[in-house]
Length: 349
Image 1 (cartoon, one colour):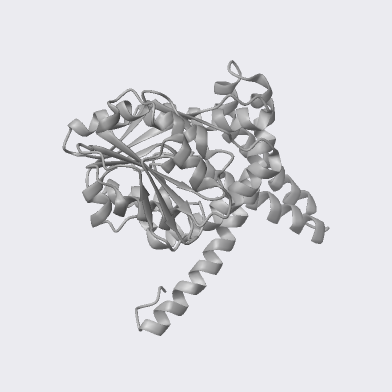
Image 2: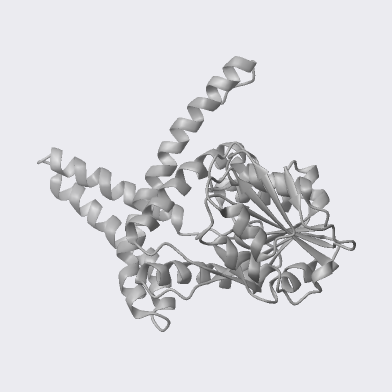
């Protein structure tokens, strides 16, 4: 069901915001969207209430959303697809309910579409938080932003600040709802769209965001991300080699952590070879430290606390995300084999 306040006549852009149990956060997001620098009649704000049982819909409507779509709870991928289906703009922008876009966000996001080869754009995060974990997350994004800004095009768009040509979203059948929670559904889509044309990083199109503020929350997110990344790699194996967003050292760190663990355990079990096994584990620790040095050096003048804590945090990140990835490859790989067996499709060797 769609509740529209009014039908704007000359809509060029549609902003889709999925929201679930978001009564405490969706108001500032919508308020920022209705106060953009582009003419208000040129865009519509569509909030998709993903089966919330709180006052999300009422808060979004009171904050100025042009329409609130009510859909059964199905996760962000399905909610965004519902928003795209209702959108009337030729460009569909997306952000999350916990984001507050800057005043010039829409203008910056849509500017690259003057080039007909551009199929999508990606903005950036900012935060006002002071806990060290949140600061670490922000710097983790910023070093990636610096790398992406040097590229003529990218292949990775996060939906916290995303824009696509609507016809491309329709032709690609939107977000894949095989991902039941916020994970890599946006990455899956951006990989597909990147094959059709250029995706552009627009760093000046920024949104305020509240990052995880505790180490446990940060690591939980990384573990889930690794688990669902495995399914993405099974679906699109060509992307396992890397993309424009992911730290190139991450897979090396996965391997080094695994080597540390295996050699350490074998050293405990074998007295005869303990010296050599633990020596190998120590060498892996040293190599791991080398992989963290570029970030430490980059972060030192920006935030010394984050720079000093980074090696330990990134070791934990590699451990939990790598474990999630390995578990996901087993679980999703077995499910794919069962589906192939049922359909008679060729199974991987």
